[in-house]
Amino acid sequence: MQPFYKDGWFNAILHEDYDALTNKVREHGFDSVEQLVRWRCFNETGGGLMAELGSHQLDACSIFLGHVHPLAVAGVGGKYFYGRPPASGETNDYGYQTNWNDRDSDDHVYMTYEFPGKNHPRGPNHGTDEGDIVVVTYTSVNTNAFENYGECVKGTRGAMIVEKEATVMLYPERDPNAHGGPADARAMTATVQAGASGKPALDSSSTWGPAVSAGVAGAGPTGGQAGGVVSRGYREEIEDFAFCVRQWDPKAGYAKDGDKYKQRLPRCHGEVAMVDAIIALTANQAMRKRQRIEFQGGWFDPKNRDVPDADAKEKILLA
Image 1 (spheres, rainbow, N blue to C red):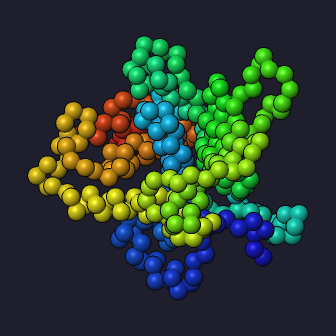
Image 2 (cartoon, rainbow, N blue to C red):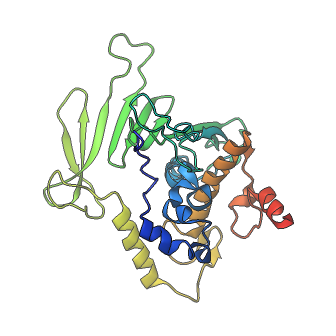
Image 3 (cartoon, rainbow, N blue to C red):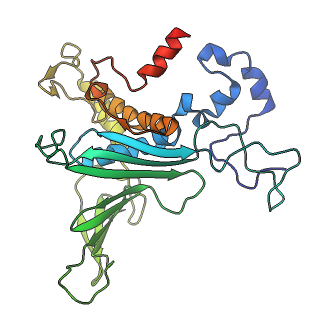
């Protein structure tokens, strides 16, 4: 019998594929055929929910806050749904086998990050207020799709929800001196759609009136008809990468002028990816160790050899 709930990351392996790969996986750096095919289910090859999903949302948070690095992270995660192996013949209430597989990555993660505010010494303004902290929470549940992916920013004057890179909802805080009106009234919703000309258009609507549309300058959408699918940016990133390859000057290389590179690099170049990986993988350590971990500035310096998992590397070398 099959499990009642299927793990979308736990791909089936055909017998002929398994047999053909058995003697070759170690040549390519994998421990087993399962790790090769079901790489998303192994922390060693996929990094779990924080690396695959959380890295994108935390990157967005860093941008929102002025391209800053987090100060600390703590959290809890585990394999709460795809838990223990079933006993012989054991089934659940539906008559199916219990929902277990041998994944070692968590199916639930709940993280709390501390980021520097604008007036913090490590914030965008390099201020003096050590107490200017922005708390960022990230949650990913592998077995429930109630909410779409996105970001929710809660400020003193309102809240903004960015959903699926296509919709922005604004919720202003109610004036405490005003009377009447719902406390949770949505002031505006803005959605990106494909306009009649084939270009992206921003469609906004308020709680009290009809929608108003305005053209948005930018790269073309993946769909050219009104109401069609609008590009989420992946196509534009590849085009930008190709542009940088064509313009690349090997003599200039990665030389910097102060904090900036002397020549044009892709927006998500290696240094940006390194920072996102550190933010995500340090969260995995915090969950594993059940402790709050403070980020060190040297971890984000590509020329510095300090790394978050230095203790783990030392144990490997000693072994």
